[in-house]
Every structure is written in structure tokens, then in C-alpha cells.
Length: 611
Image: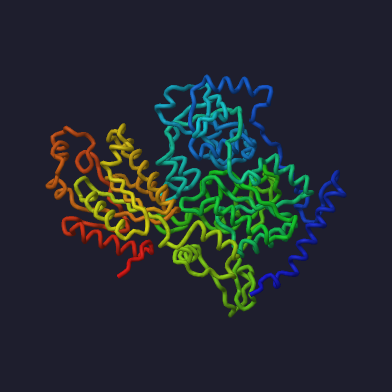
């Protein structure tokens, strides 16, 4: 099937248009760029005034010495993403993490205190214990996970925000299924620090350095190329044929060059990892006409904030030198809420950006869903399909199924070289690593089943198997931790991290902690599911039976008050709502339980058992 023949006329038009624009820019470099007679023909790649927060060479040594004498904070992944875009000018006009006044104004009205449009809070959250040692007027060194000093924050504001109110104002919901709300209410520190930044250096990246442009360097590249009108394509997913078609169409509509600008910071849990995506983008880039398209990476921590986020993305792309941005249906939407309803109206993002596009200086290019019409052997906009024509579609769920089961992915959907890259990172389920995560009360039978399962999987012998039992981990990995809620969470997350590394490298991790809190279990799932299989097993043996067993006498001690915060007695156990498997060892033997697990693994495609 030769789909490119059906686009021959467009390819010729597109290449000719780009050559024309390049010649116009060269001939009229001192004049306004007047390409068409449209109302927006004065948009050009300028990006506005970029804030530069990096210290000049003359001040660098003094700032470095000052940073070494100050208290310091190790930044989280989100903090690092935000800091990089603050320092490099991507978040212009912000000069640091927001103060309380700016934060309150942004949450309520989408504007900074001075009236500048800005829809998303950019704040530095810390623990109460850490904040207690700091006050307004103090300075703080911000460091990466390796201890490298990146910037100094002069604290101008310190406050305890109402996180529930922030969730409602910014994201329109308190539903924990929204990834940003879940992060805000469960992972964000209770104290915010705001103030101006002075940067020592940008966070260091060892990967894809040829694709990591600052706003200033990308603007300079556009100027060097003679590009005056640039349309940005925002994505957090791999690109397939439909994406190529819609970007062609958007570039033609805007009479502009194309910037493919994927997010490689934090995206939605479960998304394809960014290195796999970058390899796919580089393959797709070869399918565009020469000198028409640029690929660059954006180190943004997405919030999945729907309409507000779309507006935020546009402001950021303006700072990177773009004049237009493609906005599709449900841009930056997180999907459905806990009731199965969309968090945002599918066209609300387009409406909000259209309302403010003149103010921010970037024009929206709306795009429609592109579908493949079998009879014409080409992609067309969904509303251009004629009556009776057969439309082919492949959902993301179906694509993953085909990858996991080693099935063919049709040529009309994506390019063979993209399939090859996806298959490298997402081999068939039977070759992937996986984690089996037991949870249940003390004495429920988790360790007994886990040990029996470990032996059986080692007997099958197609993957290395590691057991991370609760007592073993407490001895070797978490010996310094107590049994407070905070320490239990740390212990479970450590188990999850080790399990994720085992899974990523094709092994089997069997985890058997109590893991009493649903949110922490979800964090572990999010950590692992994008890397391989994940099977949560609730060992649901009742409290009464667990107390009767009480081999270690722990329940008796807890009843007498000798053990505080004991799960099931003085501390609640939050039972899983939708585990992959539930086992009650009061009615099932260890052997029967293992057989149920093996069958479930086989049904999930993770295990091929010879019968």
C-alpha cells in the first residue's frame, strides 16, 4: 500500500511554500513578515522578553561560595523540571517560585498579581519540619539528587496553602483519579516557599543533548534558518501516521514551519518512556520534507490540567519562539474521573486558548481527528468521511495489546521503523519482567504463598526470581525505619523501587509486605506498570483468623497496648478495591493459591505454561 502517492500534491505544495517563506525572510529581514493577507499575518518568531536567571560569569564564583554556606534542599523530579524552565526562560516572565500573592492570584484568576496571564501555579513545596528552620529573608540552596548546587532561592514568602482549594480552583476537581490532584493531595509538602532565584547552572542531562534547546538557543536556530512562522506540536505519546498527517495539515493551514516539541519531563503515569518516544520521533522526522521540521525536547512536568494547561503550553511555546500551536480535542486532559465522565469538556482547551491568543501572542491551530479511509487509502479529517466509506482505527489499548501479544501492527497505522522501536522497549508479555505484589494483614499467609510461588517460578525457569518479603526487607533494606505511617510508606516505596528495577530488567519480583495504605500501593503500581506486568494480590484472610494464628504474638501485644500503630488493631488496613486476584487462606491451601496465581499470570500473557 503506497499511501505517500495520495499526498504527492501536498508534499510539493509544502516544500514549495517553505522555500518561498525562506526566500521572503532573507529578502525582507528588516521588514515585517507579510506572508498572507490574513488578520494574524504579523505574528513572527520573537518569543517576547526572556527572563535570564543564570548568574553572569562575574558573579558565578561568589554565588557558588554562598551556595556552599546555606541550608540546602534536594529537589524532586517535578521541582527539577520547574527549576530548569525557570532558569532557562521557558517560564518567562516568572523570576522564581511564586510568592503567596502570585500563587493566590493565579489559582483564583489565572493571572499573576501584576495582571500578567499565567494559569498554573509554579511553587516550591517542602515538609513542615524543613520549613520550620527557614523564614522570610533567608536563602536556600537548591540541589539535584547528586548534590549538585543549581540555584539559590531568596525566600520572600512562606505559607501553608489550602491544597483542597488549590485542586478545585486550578483543576476543577478533588477527585484523586486526576493525576495532578492525586500528586497535590498525597505527595505535595504542606508548606510553600516563594521568592526570586539566582541560577548557578541548568540541570545536567546526559541524553539527547543535541535535542535539548533552551528558549534562547531555539529562537536563534529559527532566526538562522530564516523561519518566521513556526507551529508547535505538543505531544507526550509516540507519533504515528495520523499525527504526521495532522501536522502536515496544521503547517499548511498556518503557512508555517513545524516544531515537534514533545514533553520529556513528567507526563501521565503509564505513558511510554521518553527515550523510546524520542527514538520514534527521530524515525518519523525522516518522513518530513527536508528543512521544514525541527525536533526539540521540552523538560516540562505536565499537570494534565486540561484547558488551563493548554494555555500554559501556549505561553511556554511563545517563549521558545513559536507563533502558532496545534491544539486538539481534550488537549492535556487526564481522561475520565472516578464516575467514568471526562474531567474536561473536549473542546474547552481550544475555547480558552482562542479567548487569550491575542494577549499572549500565539495563534491556535485547531485540529480534527484524522482517520484512515480504507477505500481511498489515505488519512482525512473525521468530518470529511463520506457516507458509506469504511474507516479503520486502532486505539491505544489495541496497540498495546498487539505489542504485548507479539501481533502485527498494520502499515496504515504507523511506520515499520516506529513499530521496531516500540517492540524494543515493549516486547511481548511472555518476555517482559513483572511484579507480584501481595498485600494483607500480618498472619494472612502472604509469606507462605510468596515462598511457594518463588520456588514454582524458579522451577519453570524462564526468568530470574527475587523475593522481597516484608521481614527480609525490614532486616536488609529498612532496618532504621519504625512503624509510623510515614515510615511504612517509605518502606513500601523502597520495595516498589527495587521491584521496578527487577521488572525493568526482565526479572520477576515477588513482594510480600503488609502495605496497608491504598495510595502507597497505587504509587508502587504506577512505578512498575509502564515497565512490565503488575499483579496485585489481596490475601484477604480475616482479622479473626490472623489473630488466631498470631505465630509471633504481635496481635496479643497490640491488644495489650505494647505495640502502637499495629495494622488491623490500632491502625487501619485499607483493603484493595480492584486487585487482580483475591486469596483467602482460610479456604485455600498454599498449593491451591499458587495454582490460582499461575493461571492468572497465564491469562495476563506473562507466563506460558506447558501443560
